[in-house]
Image (cartoon, rainbow, N blue to C red; front, top):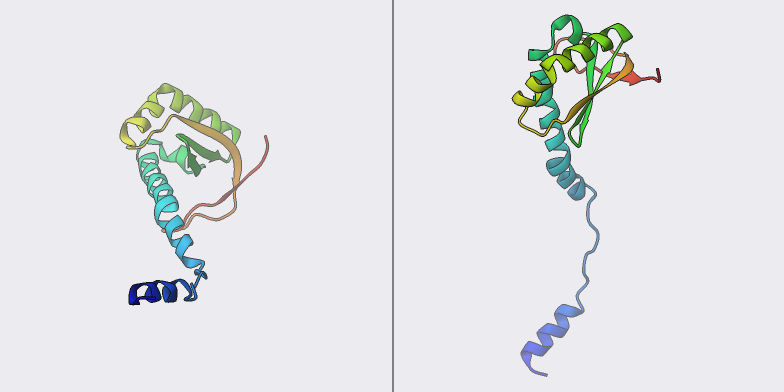
Length: 130
């Protein structure tokens, strides 16, 4: 055997460390998938706060944004109806114009907010069937 063949055989017989840390795939997931969703939802939230009247937006929480559908939780039927009328009256088109992503529609769902709103904190809610 010549030197090149011996080197090749030696390299093939070396132990391959096939163990990977869990953090590597999670970092990729966080950077590529979740970061994009967070950016889109935060941009939608800022546009939402600018456009929707405060007396209605206080009773809403942005739940999710998936495949062009923004899901918004509303805490009462009266505010849900009022928001439906506002969205049908041109507010949806204004949201679509100001948002850089592909917003197709807004889905309203009834829900209850579990956390008290404090400045600088997120609003969390729990959906219920109406």
